[in-house]
Image (cartoon, rainbow, N blue to C red; front, side, top):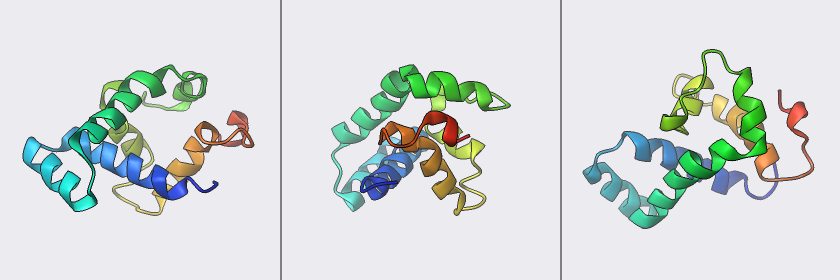
Length: 111
């Protein structure tokens, strides 16, 4: 998955947490990971505005049943992969997202 695997993990988890946290939780999360609130907002915007329009997602979203709620990404994607129930499924989610980080993995190889 390349050198971005740890960054991707943090981005996914922090973004998912950001959706469900209140302002106090965002402050604690930002302080504990030393991440500015604006960075958290930038990541949320990426999931809600950029990711949903990528060619990768336009093809991949049709493969989920039930459909993924795009308004709650990445939390809804974590739920679809059962990340909260089985932490080892995070690796499956990262493998799924791999085509976004490298050109060496074709989209059809992750399904």
